[in-house]
Length: 316
Image (cartoon, rainbow, N blue to C red; front, side, top):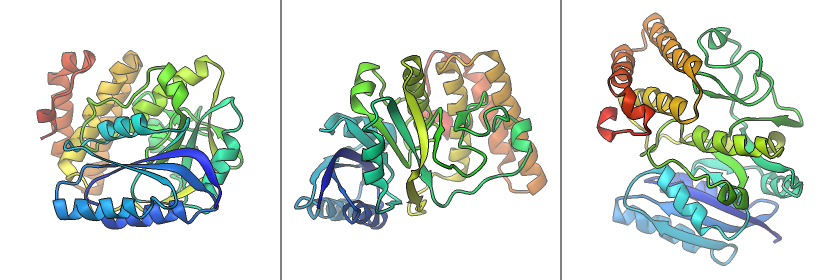
């Protein structure tokens, strides 16, 4: 089967079953990637051995690279994976997706255009929210509603309608997106390892940084309806609800400073948090105290966040 000069980076942790399905979809597609890099963070030795065995089974079809790290961190894993890539076109992939048979073939065709710097993948399971409250509370931008965009409140949003053809985007979601390693190297862009564990915003941070550099050189970052995957969103391992809430609030605040978004952004991050509190009260969904605690942590450690510091103890 034909191979295309693409390296696929897949961090994994404790999810052997979903990883197997993901790997099978890659090697059953119309074309094969030249390389698949697995960065494993699984603690349990027996489960880790199963993951290694799954990677070994790939080696007669693709260049399969296995790396193990003891620290559970998606950002560190993706940096490790990127350093091991042998091809310029790199796909960052979650371990719980299914690529369509033509996805990689379409990626290779699109990236022949040297003016395209990044492709954000489209999730076949995604729907669209018609709520106007997202505009009110800064979770999506009305002016940019037809493209992928990053809001002043530091939320990443895809177009508020079905993507048809090629559409601009300012960011990409970590379940599947494509970059050029040569550009990331030249621009010195790497995943921010201050964003540890598996936390909201690491993919927004990397892809938004990459987009801004691409824009400065008049290169395109796009969504394309030919680049589709199914994001199965595994429940085998998920961050506890309170920790997840606190991560979202703190990390967005951190990125507002990092990306020099200005005072308007700081106001909108707080305003959007207030909107979440109201929503949780109205829906009686719980977690109101978690939201308030998270905002108080941001207020207490604002100087640290402003200076690029995050302490893992704040997430507890």
